[in-house]
Image (cartoon, rainbow, N blue to C red; front, side, top):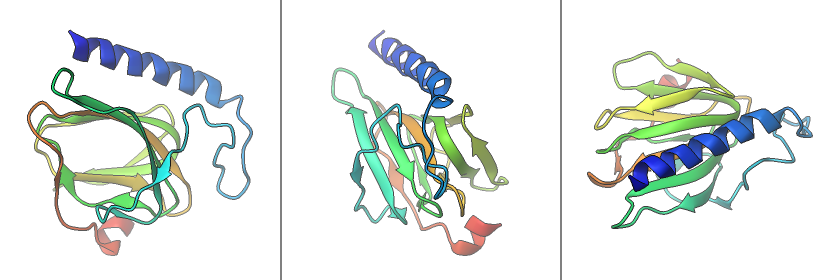
Length: 160
């Protein structure tokens, strides 16, 4: 029940964010909104990302509610490593242009308002396009285990 409530809250926040994005000021550098709905957060220093990435955790999963929710901002060209989530993940695209790719599938181009359902145990990666930032809210189900990080996404795969 708590997981359903959490997902409903995130979805409501997503609708509010999408509806208010049109009212934001825009920085001409790469069209990154200067009045973001959610805070950008702290710079990520993990080796599981390439490029500059920021994370603002909203909810950390725990033993009572294993769902974690965070706002992730990727600068142009930044991306995750290949990885998988034993319990699956949902990505809500808030701003910018991004990419999502599952192993063995074609890369998808993502835009504000898109929603991606990352199936459990399916290796995938996501990140910004080469010339635009990308902002996502990640809803990660941790009830079956933590994220499993795999190899880096090569420049060849990223550019394909």
